[in-house]
Image (cartoon, rainbow, N blue to C red):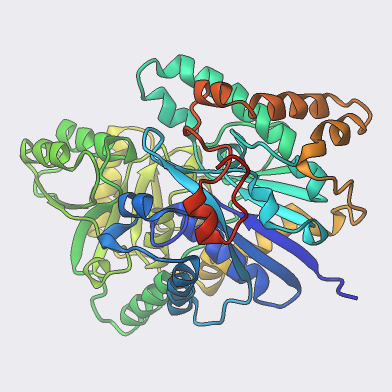
Length: 464
């Protein structure tokens, strides 16, 4: 009898979209499955060709899930060097243009058969369950762990009527996450607070960056100049990703920073505005198109400037530290994990930013120890996750496996607990197109359309 735990990781994005919720769950699946002690499935969204063209870069598109799986496994193997011992499954998704994200269509928990439902990891649980209509996650799975990736409240506050939207979103997120998750892991204190949640950075860096850092370390140890370039920043080129803060710091302290040259790398909706703002400065600020942070172009930079405070745990900061660079970043909860590394310098105000930037440019980065390198790795991140998740405490006595159509009887038989009643209310409300539309769901996303059913080999819902 197979006694291995079954872990299903559900996430909100997939490669080739180079976003955190596509990349990090992929590495998590690979490293959880690597030792063969668990059976792991990664469940990712499948987009129709129309949405693929809007989401995936460089005109990359796939005619079938099998094609995309080949692409993803090849990408992963190039970076880890070992085989991917997990299964890759797809659920129907649709692009929400106003939210700039992919939303699930239908009951995505059905991707995992009831008899294999054991442990579920929901990457961005609020995002996955806002419009969920189907079997209650806590009923289907013995343990449901939510990992909070995104500081949604911070993004919403920057929009029109942002304070009111953030107030409502906070309670909606608390409601659905509490309903559907047994345990919640927040990557940092920069995320929304949830009752009885744990703060732990369970992410690591792409092994390629540690390899680059190792080569730089060898150059330093052999007396070779490892870093011949100055300061740079890389990130999606939208104002909320740190560009507004960085350009203001440079503008306010131009005289003190005289002679400083900074390179900005990114592509995004605000690229033109960022370029115009950079040209108005007396300092030399060059703006370049976005590219892979592991590109050879970045290897020789010594200082990474990152004033962003909208990230939860900034991936590019972790990558820069792994490559052996000095990082100058804001003293903010999102950077708490990085303070343990000697090359991380945090500032509280503009004067400190100037002082730390000048110091960083005049010094050589500290050489990372093996222990520090390990702490940045996905191996260490997986160790931290397993400690927080405490998988062995997951109930092996599964609750009712009733189909989602029996949701009412399944929920109300749990003793009338408040969260069961809440889940029933959410189930009913999410089953009506009008209600879904009021709360921002994509039109006609209660069930996958005929095209997606055919592409995924699903039965076409009645009435389609």
